[in-house]
Length: 412
Image 1 (cartoon, one colour):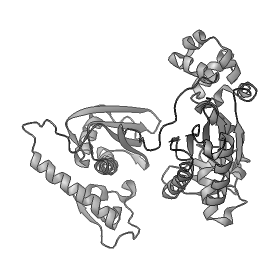
Image 2 (cartoon, helix red, strand yellow; image 1 turned 180 degrees about the horizontal axis):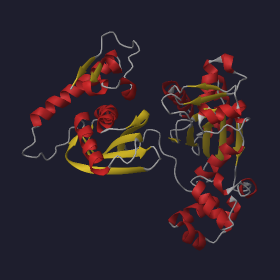
Image 3 (cartoon, helix red, strand yellow; image 1 turned 90 degrees about the horizontal axis):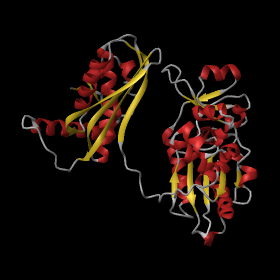
Image 4 (cartoon, one colour; image 1 turned 45 degrees about the vertical axis):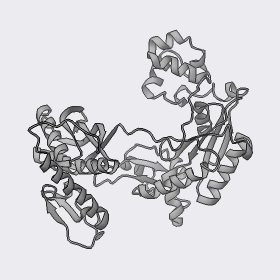
């Protein structure tokens, strides 16, 4: 029996949710973007009225304003978007437990065994209507016999539409589309295919796989299979959470970093976020990685394995600083910076300790950091801060906005 796969895409998700909560903005071009003053000034999402002005996701806000001076740019509210994303997934789960998220606003559903609710197209129509009536936003849904074509279907007609791609009609619908519309064909791959005269998905499907293998390596075989509708990848069960392989955080800083002290302050802020998330998951990590980008956009990453697993922000920061000093000579100021930790073990797993390791002191430090986690959940993130991050509050983002009832204190 042919599978029945749906790909559901919430239309203009961020902007749609914002317009739902701000009725006065309906009928106006709206975009969600970063903070210009904090140098995160790019377009993250836009509504269809903004699209008419050729405003693109990822372009600078100042460029978008040149195209559309009346553009309304709103800061993102990710907690709100996550809540709406979960509401949508709860609707999908009424029809199948095979719901695989693809980002915050897209999901694949396998409804092959959901015949009591109707055909794939009928289920798609029920979901489309429920999302619209229960949540106030719209979706586009692709219905097909595999995941790749289902995603092409959700992109084919927007907004508030359903497209059915079958084994009988896929050559008419899919093959005339640009090769760049196929999932996993990025700009570089599309450009390389164009250089060889392959411009459509049909052209890709008709190309001898041995040539694609020469041009693209192992990706050539995979893209040829996708173009010909030979994708057999399953839709994951919703409760089969992906294994977390790394936890990280990065930022474009409000001003250029020019000294080791600047870098250390930002590393501490990032490491505190990473360490808190690791403790929440019950993880300790043994590999610390840093990423650095300077003002001319040259970037590099470096990583090192430490002697023992850790979930301490102080140890992560100290390791990151040593990596940084060993690999950067201050040729130029730094614009963005990141930290991640990987090679996880669970906190309750036994580990081999160095005989010179002061395990008692490390246990005390972990207890302190867990206590800080609790205080921040209870009284707000800014109630307790390391003294080092208070040296330059604009750089480190210290901005208590009355979200706690006690005065902030610092600790080392």
